Image (cartoon, rainbow, N blue to C red; front, side, top):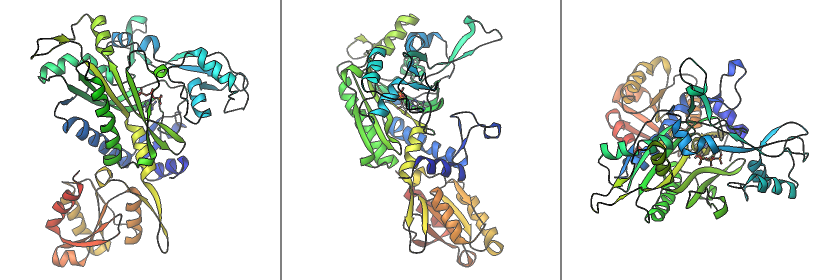
Length: 457
Ligand code: ATP
């Protein structure tokens, strides 16, 4: 696996991810996705939608607002307690998350999740954990720091106009539970999933796009009958791991479950498991899967005064469903995908950089390359125009063909189509496979079906 700096440089050089607001000196931990990054991100989101919404007969989608009525966040508990334990080094004045100091110190064996301030402080003291910046162990007491970004609606900036950028997409789902259930005539058990931006004023962002203040989440809230929840929890644990392994292509040895111990669980949660991925800096949470009981629906029911209970049409029973929540960050998953797929392969005479990504995730599916620009470019443009109606393609007529192949390997393009004299005379093209570097010759009118078949998943 490449190290993080190699990944960061690669992302910038090839147009996946740029530092945010770069010409103004950047903004710490903000990033912009370039052409290829945007394509890859879209393909990851599409793969998630396919697996967790389209292929699940009882699951539905939603696209809710980022700025919601602030009472949503009061009810959910975010205003009172969506906070990280902040600790300052008295010696060098650097700021840290106390739980992350412990997590780094124990190399992920302890996470500090759900610990009280007293327990965190005691652990740091007893184990003589030092400031990663200056090496001293002289910390302030822990203070809680709320992660919600505040904003104001309208012209006045008073308490009445205060609103929040959503800290997770899940609350948009809970407040629409009845709308979706009724409009889709959904019967419990069913799920509502959504993909969208979330914002957290993280104290210690870092490790490239692993932890940023603005990120995207893919969350599913699956509503089921109390008593069946643990079965569905197991079901989604498996679905998520299978998705990472089979659909995204992460390797088994880089993935592990981390079940939360009882004292780590949020007070409303019956069970929580993280799926962790072995990033270049070590194992880190990729996907959180939680049995949230009826906590969310019940707090919104109490706070809003609306009846959110489900009426079972068969038994006439009215109840609040339990919720299983698998929640994953798009950016973290994209980072894991790049870490897993970017490799250097040794060939006889040279090394080739290759992004060995699943073809359906690749930013470009096809590169159309005229063998000799002067002779074959017109025909190649024609081929590009036709194929790009069905696939995301790229066109390249610069440099020699070998160099063009190398560039396409490096950005993960699974197939290069070369347009040459045979194309002009016989309407055939050669298709080169990224992984095997083997070439096949096909009639032009066979290409679409050939590629479409290979992209099925
Ligand atoms: P962490 O312990 O890493 O702060 P969390 O437990 O607060 O994460 P959740 O609230 O469970 O995270 O969010 C679900 C998923 O959203 C995480 O598993 C992760 O993939 C993603 N995520 C959370 N915070 C961030 C962030 N600041 N930047 C990028 N992705 C994030």
